[in-house]
Structure formats: C-alpha cells, structure tokens
Length: 297
Ligand code: NDP
Image 1 (cartoon, rainbow, N blue to C red):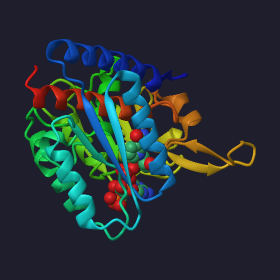
Image 2: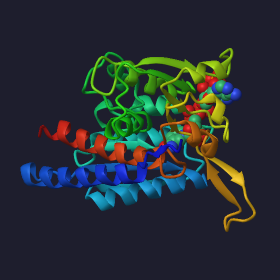
Image 3: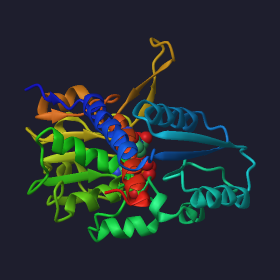
C-alpha cells in the first residue's frame, strides 16, 4: 500500500491565500493593516533563516512585518525594554521573540513580558491556560495548530480516533495533546502522549490511528511501528550528513518515510509537511490579533 502524501506546502499556500484576503478585508473595513514584529537576538543561523521565512510570508500576504535584530550580548533589561515598547505600539498586533535566546536571558520572563493579546506564538501562560480550558480567544501555538489544520483539511478528522503523540515538549507535544483532546472541532480524539520514559513504546505507537512524531531523532519511527492504515504526521526536522548534496546534508523527519509510507494510509513528508504549516498558522494568529486589538470581528 502506498500512502497518500499530505502536502503541507499546498495546504499552507491555500491558507496564505485566505490570510491575504483577510488582510484586504481588514484594510477595507477599518483601515487596519496587521503588523508583526519579530525580535531576533544573537546570530544563531537557523533562527536567522526562520525569521527571514516568517518576514517573507508576511510580505507576501500583506501583513506589515519588522525584524528587530539585537546583539548576542543583549541584556534582559534591554530586551524587556524593546518588548515594552512593542506592547505599547498600536500598529504592532503581534510580537514574536525568536527562540532560543542567548543564555544570559531568562526565556520564561521574556515570554511573560509579551502582552497576551499580542502573543501570536501562543506561549504566554495566559494563552496556554485559555487553550487548556477551551477558550476560543487563546492563540494556539503555530506548530500544533498546523497539525490539527492539516488533518482537518485532508479529511482526517481526529474525532473519536486514537492519537499517539511521541514527544511532550511545551511547543509541540503538550499543546497538540491539549488541542486534540478538546471538545471542539479538530479535537475529540483519545490522546496518548509518549516520551523517553514510555514503556514498550513500539506497542504504544502501533495502537495509533493517528501517529504524531515530535521527537527530534532522525528516522526514529520505523515502518513496523505504524498500524496499517494509520495517518502519520512527522513534525521532526533533523539534519543528516550527505556528501552527495550541495549543502553536505539533507533534512529528514522523525519517521523513516519510505518504510512508513508502505504501511500508512497517509503521511506528511519532510520537508514540505508540517514546516510550511507552522508559518501559515503564525499568519492566521496575526490576523486574529489584529481583529481583536482593532475591534473588527
Ligand atoms: P524537544 O527536544 O523539546 O522534545 C522532544 C521530545 O521527544 C521529548 O518529550 C522527549 O522525551 C521525546 N523523546 C526524545 N527521545 C525519545 C525516545 N528515544 N523515545 C521516546 N521519546 C523520546 O523537541 P521539540 O518538541 O522542540 O521538537 C521535536 C522535533 O520537531 C524536532 O525535530 C524539531 O526540530 C521539530 N520541530 C519542527 C517544527 C516545524 O515547524 N516543523 C516546529 C518545532 C519543532 P522526554 O520529555 O522524556 O525527554
């Protein structure tokens, strides 16, 4: 059996098209252009690439974006001062501080400093709490929201299904479990969260109707970990050395794709699966922020 490929690039392009229409609507309805400010501290090359991709996606959809670059020696106070300024600026609807931050900065305090109504990453405890209680005003973190969206848009409604998520991080595994268990559209699944202490992980994974890998270990999930006919969502992004490529490496997911695709009914590729969805969902959060701050529903 060859699995259907869940094309995250295509779904993300559709969502970007919808975001563009909403930007035009906001301009017409209230002369409001959604604005996102991204703060990049230091010179982490991967972070610089992610920030560029986010800024480009904003540009394409008409969202105004600015990237604020700060030295890697930036102090806690300097970064907090920038956040305070952005919190107070009415033309800024979304604030995103690219993680990870240099070690002298206390990440948790920075996340707490962002006004919850501008926290388009959905990492502020106020938004996390709202999400847990099913409050629709919460910003949903982009990667988990992207996973739910791609399931729904490809006819794989998780309602009633047994979902196994491998990974329990605060940015992927935990919030995804919360979204999938909610009593609302895109939820209603029976969710198991597995991690490095899970006993007999192979058997747990094989119970899944929808198996999500968010581990950070290249090709960890093998074909025989997948129940025949399951849907496999691969969140992982890992570099594998590969001298045959121009860059000297290639990107692979947490799932051994070829093996899993033999068994699964549908699967996301890496790259081109969850990654593009993450950026698309960030844009939808910017629209949500602009609507709520400007009072245009
Ligand atoms: P973390 O390192 O924060 O979490 C990894 C999780 O996997 C942990 O819960 C850990 O368990 C679990 N784990 C690690 N090894 C094993 C193992 N041998 N058996 C079972 N569980 C294990 O990673 P993130 O959640 O931040 O990211 C996961 C992956 O997703 C990465 O590859 C990352 O690059 C990618 N990613 C992709 C995004 C995208 O947009 N496509 C966005 C964000 C992340 P424990 O808690 O017990 O340590």
